Image (tube, rainbow, N blue to C red):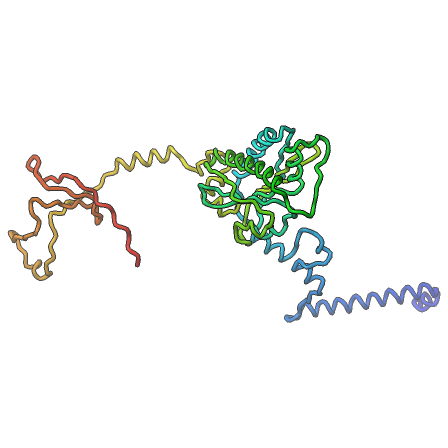
Length: 366
């Protein structure tokens, strides 16, 4: 009776709120049943929509204008360029920056500042496609390593060098004339700067491994400056050259194949590292090896006889060999022949004088 009285005393607004709360409670219970049924089913799967698939593969339209990729494509690209880091290259390029600053000041008679932006690893084909044209590509050869490298000078630095070397006034930016090929004078002036830079690069590598970088040719078309396969990894060093209000960039590209002859030296963390080499242990091991005792056997002669005949031998049986007194005997250490020499007698004993060393034979391939 009391429940009926309370329901009758409820206003219309309160009745509406009670009905809404009951409907939400029933919907939540039904949703929980559906979720439990989906989780309990063995074949229940969740299907990705198109936006989620594009984001996973790295084809998101929102990131199309950016320089960084994401998803599976980022993993693929990073795996193809993820080569081992060469710590000594940082020291080499730091030396190059100091040397180039001094050399370019002497060349231009101007206040030149050279700075290193970064040292990274890129694929050769991707880098060649990203070169902003017009630019001047200088192909150089490492004589001792018998391979090539690439030095790229952008248009801003080309016109700055030409302006400075031809007596341009300080404080005025270089005039850039785009849309035409470089003249012979411009090419020769830039060639002087490139040769100075290559000489400094050789000096930077000297404490690590002496090498001579010689200019091979200069190109303006990236197609004619190909020095490696497009998928090969290269070391890219970006340098910034400032001449007051003028300046530009120099980029040095060295394939990993070019650096292969000195790869172990470049893996050092500091100059002169011995990769865990312990000189005390080496000297101790050498000393102990020299004191090791081994047995040498002098083979007086060899003969092959049937087993039946050998079983018939008795005390006093004479065995004849083909060895003569003037023949050289062979001395063996185990099964390995070591020396040869004539046989003689010393203090009532048979002696062999070592005169020849037997070179070990190379193991035969199966």
